[in-house]
Length: 289
Image 1 (spheres, rainbow, N blue to C red):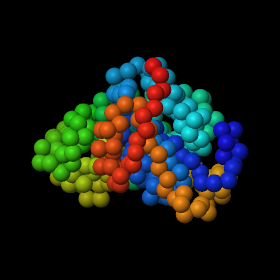
Image 2 (image 1 turned 30 degrees about the vertical axis):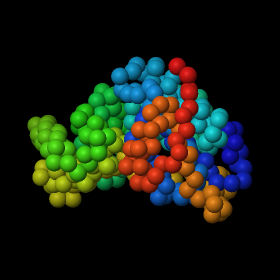
Image 3 (image 1 turned 180 degrees about the horizontal axis):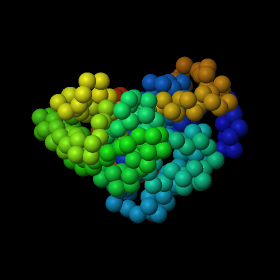
């Protein structure tokens, strides 16, 4: 498929964008569901964290990244594997590029709706995503009541590699005790928790373990990365491009190319934790100011 939406021979090219490398958990989920595609991942590591920037600046950065993936790398679909960009720049990205664009927030809310019987859900996220209240809005449109909580210590713990560390376990327990207490005070009966950050899948087992202390039987933890990958699969299957990608050459299966705007060595070192496989040689790219 070219930029105007017409199909061309060969595997579908899917562009995945994040402000750093946490979005590799989304790419990992995509690989499991669409192994026949080509993937191009861009981490805008020179300009993170996006959460400290204005909506206008985040939109400008995100649009530059989206155009790089579409215009220079030939992406036929875009997955915005960044909660902040999904919350604050999705509309701008969709207007800037002529290909389907999917964020992580709407699929996460949809998965929560499917999982919840009580209609009450919890969301844990970074401070920037929390401040946007994008998950609460997306849940509300689906008839859910969502209680959100910022958990700013979790990302640095994951990036430190403390994904099974007692300190991480204790921090998670504190955060969950606070959000469950607030839910009780508000008269909510939550039966699902949405992981509103692409770093959090790496500590999902610890989160699930801690949740059992506070939650009723049948409580579900929703990985928004998995939900986004499932939504992307459905989107691609609904287009003519899927037919051209259905029978790829074996040499082209699961082809991945990663780019970063800074910290290439760190990306290569830590990226495999998020992707679950070596990220390969990461290319440095300059997107400008």
